[in-house]
Image (spheres, rainbow, N blue to C red):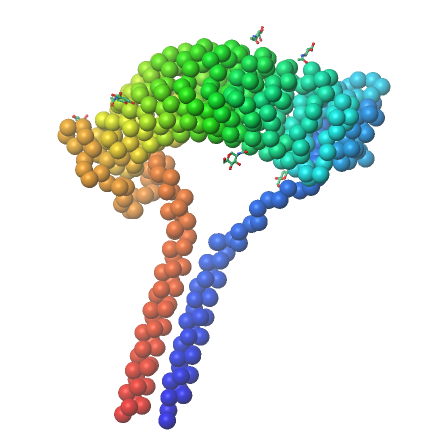
Length: 438
Ligand SMILES: *[C@@H]1O[C@H](CO)[C@@H](O)[C@H](O)[C@H]1NC(C)=O
Ligand SMILES: *[C@@H]1O[C@H](CO)[C@@H](O)[C@H](O)[C@H]1NC(C)=O
Ligand SMILES: *[C@@H]1O[C@H](CO)[C@@H](O)[C@H](O)[C@H]1NC(C)=O
Ligand SMILES: *[C@@H]1O[C@H](CO)[C@@H](O)[C@H](O)[C@H]1NC(C)=O
Ligand SMILES: *[C@@H]1O[C@H](CO)[C@@H](O)[C@H](O)[C@H]1NC(C)=O
Ligand SMILES: *[C@@H]1O[C@H](CO)[C@@H](O)[C@H](O)[C@H]1NC(C)=O
Ligand SMILES: *[C@@H]1O[C@H](CO)[C@@H](O)[C@H](O)[C@H]1NC(C)=O
Ligand SMILES: *[C@@H]1O[C@H](CO)[C@@H](O)[C@H](O)[C@H]1NC(C)=O
Ligand SMILES: *[C@@H]1O[C@H](CO)[C@@H](O)[C@H](O)[C@H]1NC(C)=O
Ligand SMILES: *[C@@H]1O[C@H](CO)[C@@H](O)[C@H](O)[C@H]1NC(C)=O
């Protein structure tokens, strides 16, 4: 009757395994930090604040001090001299100064912005809400006249086009991550005649891009909405436009052929829409274009060679379209770019006597007829020469493959440990068994 030692040995083995696995895991824990809890809205509203302007002699208008107090903004220190940012928040009027700019950030949702408080803040030229999910407010007409800049980011729950259209003296409007209910951007843009810069993004805004836009607009960002229809060719009349972001909508049709009339453009994204047709040749006439993102559409035809003559270009993303034929670029052009993406164009290929597979373009090399070699390599693998040209790596899988690397070694160590200890155990077991039986 000698089985007990065997039982003991089994237990010992299990213990050993546990020990091994826990040590190999704990060895890797320092690299994998515990998940940080999602940021919670800190309940304190803050002013943005101010830098004192040169004369800090006079103090803030007592009516405005009371208004700030009603917003739970601490006023024990003069808000005009409270230092947080570097913008002049107050004017230098005597006997009392007045607020020019106010930012309410991270408010708790029980903060109520009363009409009375806003009425006494009618000297404000800028009013910004950041993470302030308070109920929308009725803005007194004096404040409407004085406001030049307004923003609501993840704030005010939801806004209507009519509400925004009242702010007729705005030059800058930003509404982001706030639902905007309107039949289309025209309700807003048609009324805000002085606008220079407009961002209404991630707002579920519906409707079409307006045909008539203020010709003085320099920035338009309507990304992340539900705009549909074509991009009207009248957009190309905006010769002061520096950035245009229409990404992540459901726009269709072709890019206007006169797109190159946007001669001030530096940044444009039309990505993640349903645009079709060719890249208009006129684009090559935009002298300062730095950032061109046309990814995730249904654009087709060949990739135009003229893109490589655009001297300012730094960011070129044509991925996930229906482009076809041979990539017309050489290494010196591609290596000049900071971002170059052309993957996920299944009919596109590269000439392997011009471009190296090390560039990892994410497309197949061409055969002698200029067609993608079949079957297209899913990915130019060769982990050996990862090092040199990883800058041009095109795939979005990058991050995931990197996190794989983190887990790789520990899994291997664990596997080897379990295997080795199992073998040792088996040998001991066999020896014991033979002794016990014999
Ligand atoms: C608001 O809270 C976020 C974190 O939740 C913090 O990063 C940010 O600095 C806060 N902003 C202000 C103005 O207090
Ligand atoms: C202060 O503001 C000026 C102009 O807006 C800006 O150029 C500068 O970088 C700011 N300085 C700091 C420290 O924020
Ligand atoms: C815009 O500002 C001007 C003065 O700069 C003022 O006369 C006008 O009433 C304001 N417009 C609106 C719609 O409040
Ligand atoms: C937009 O709509 C989607 C789904 O309909 C919703 O999940 C999202 O919260 C909405 N966005 C805003 C800013 O209201
Ligand atoms: C555009 O700006 C110019 C100069 O800044 C100004 O004279 C003109 O009235 C503006 N036009 C519109 C339509 O706002
Ligand atoms: C324009 O693109 C450049 C380069 O990609 C980027 O650094 C810059 O922030 C962009 N500017 C705007 C206004 O989007
Ligand atoms: C366009 O907007 C999206 C989402 O808002 C942003 O990620 C992207 O960087 C912007 N692109 C340009 C060129 O401004
Ligand atoms: C591009 O797509 C359009 C339809 O969207 C089609 O009419 C046209 O023939 C295509 N052109 C090429 C070169 O494939
Ligand atoms: C690469 O292409 C550019 C633009 O087409 C051209 O100017 C340059 O001479 C080419 N370089 C080489 C080495 O062929
Ligand atoms: C690839 O490039 C070589 C050298 O420039 C050229 O002779 C050949 O015709 C090209 N092949 C294709 C398919 O374009």
